[in-house]
Amino acid sequence: MKYDYLIVGAGLFGAVFAHEAKKKGRKCLVVEKRQHIGGNIYCEDIHGIQVHKYGAHIFHTSNREVWDYVNQFAEFNHYINSPVARYKEELYNLPFNMNTFSRMWGIFTPQEAKDIIAGQIADLNITEPKNLEEQALSLVGRDVYEKLIKGYTEKQWGRDCRDLPAFIIKRLPLRFTYDNNYFNDRYQGIPVEGYTRLAEALLEGTTVRLGTDYLQHRQELDELAEKVIYTGMIDGFYDYSLGVLEYRSVRFETEELETENYQGNAVVNYTEREVPYTRIIEHKHFAFGKQPTTVISREYSSEWKKGDEPYYPVNDERNNALYRRYREMADREKRVIFGGRLGSYQYYDMDKVIAAALELCAAEL
Ligand code: FAD
Ligand code: UDP
Image (cartoon, rainbow, N blue to C red; front, side, top):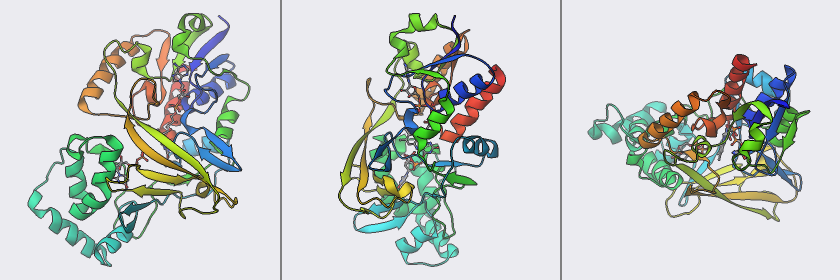
């Protein structure tokens, strides 16, 4: 055995584990099937613009320990995410707040907004929301639901809002103040030198083999290390023997435009059903870029099939039950530890992934 740990995946989870293990004098080998490190936080430099290749990433957390941790490896800027939503010829601020309600109804005060919402849902008698539609209606009323939620959500998830779990929408703030900050967290920003640099700093001094799929070389790789930290898909690890966990995938249509400022904001959501993409990202605005050109990405949501990138786990009852059965198998493994968002079939933000990795380090190292 040459290594203490074989780490499968050079994403944030694997990189944090590798860094901490190295600090404790353990020898690690990281294998990564892509041709680069960083997992989904990876950014590519296009004419000085950091392009978020696997979807826009905004770091936000209320966890002081995690914030201090990442700040050792990267300096963060003061970006605050404030997306806007386009519905046909109308434009609204997100998340749902007094700016949204004022534009929607021509009103000014929180009480007026609350009265309108209450009036729109009075006859629905929703006490315990059973699905995303009921959850959304009970929070923001029918107008906001119809214009800003229904079409976007059905494009994003490829399912009717009545067939989706309520919790998906709960992660968006709802405020009766004039505040367009998309997150409620204490700390927020984007690494000044980009996310890839952050991953490089974490993996400094650790051997990484790129372009190596663990599942295709399992036997020889297993022989190299005492233990395996696996951050790939949990069902893939077991060759999908109990069935396939469902994901949503995203296709990014990225182009560089000969204009300095295309849409005036990093994130513009297109909430009506008829526009085929869910949103357009203009990457330079995450870093207050002043370059002469710009790079935009249109996001098209799609059902995942084997070979696609798995982005959003579909945490409905069927998939959660299947995951629990895989989890039981995983918990019985003696020398393999499952981690990260694919290993735990959860939509984890970056701060949660770092916290989970640090927790594992505390227990394991
Ligand atoms: P990953 O980044 O997926 O890394 C896993 C790595 O393992 C990958 O590089 C993969 O190639 C590799 N791998 C898998 N299987 C194998 C194998 N068999 N052999 C070798 N290598 C393998 N979080 C936020 O906090 N803010 C955001 O704004 C945000 N936006 C997001 C937008 C999108 C579209 C998505 C999908 C996620 C977003 N996230 C965001 C979440 C964030 O991406 C994750 O929290 C984080 O990247 C997870 O890190 P990870 O290491 O668990 O997984
Ligand atoms: N959502 C919506 N309209 C919007 C933005 C979000 O209905 O303009 C809903 C949608 O169901 C989405 C969920 O809120 O899946 C969570 O949104 P978030 O922005 O967190 O999604 P992500 O950035 O993870 O794709």
